[in-house]
Amino acid sequence: MPEQRSSSQSGQQLQQNVLSDERVDLRVVSSDVVFEGAIWDVRRETFDYNGQQITREFVDHTGAVSVLAVDDNERVLLIKQYRHPVRAREWEIPAGLLDVADEDPLEAAKRELAEEVDLAAASWSVLSDYVTTPGGNNEAIRVYLARDLSDTDTFEREHEEADIEKRWVPLDEALDAVVARRIQNPSLVVAVYAAAISRSRGWSTLGAADAPWPQREVLRSFRQSS
View 1: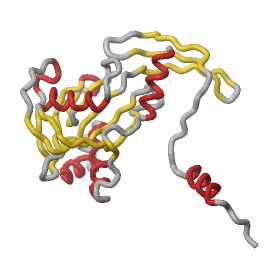
View 2 (view 1 turned 180 degrees about the vertical axis):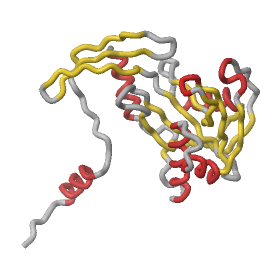
View 3 (view 1 turned 45 degrees about the vertical axis):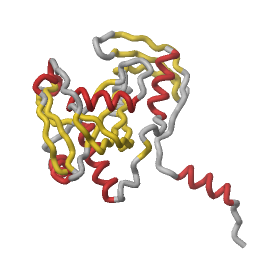
View 4 (view 1 turned 180 degrees about the horizontal axis):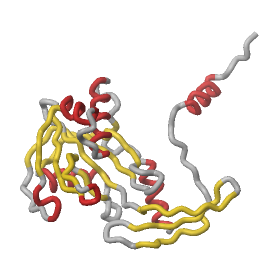
């Protein structure tokens, strides 16, 4: 007779089989800022891993939010902005650093949408969370979907933002540009893929605007203890 499993055992096994990143809490032997920059720092850490002490340097990033604004005709708002490290004016979506102490990510996203493209949104959802370069920095980004849009006051912009170009693009056109590798900004790529998939599933994958953000909390705890 086959072994009977309790519903709780079956539930635990199913939970273990769910494809998900695993958080790891290691003993950090030392943690020092070796370069202090204008926007972010470079940190050197030594940590215990599998019986060894390993040293790594990485960019210690503030984290960021980005916003895919979608209008009633399923067009998405893209902006073209100069980015010096890649020597290009690339298509992006509105985004900004979480560099204000204890600022709520959703409030930061609302601020960036207003400051970069002069828009407000009545409906907000979490579209995606991702880490940009886990082998070299700890930047975590939350991508919001913003709908029910309205105009706000026009903001004065400077530096690279002074000549931002705005364009409303059908979601499918943006998706075609991503697939063809003509646009490569990571937040835009993640947002467009996630939005196309979510739309195909009746937008059922969207998270609440205040959904937990575990990776962000891990990094905030780290900085507070450093």
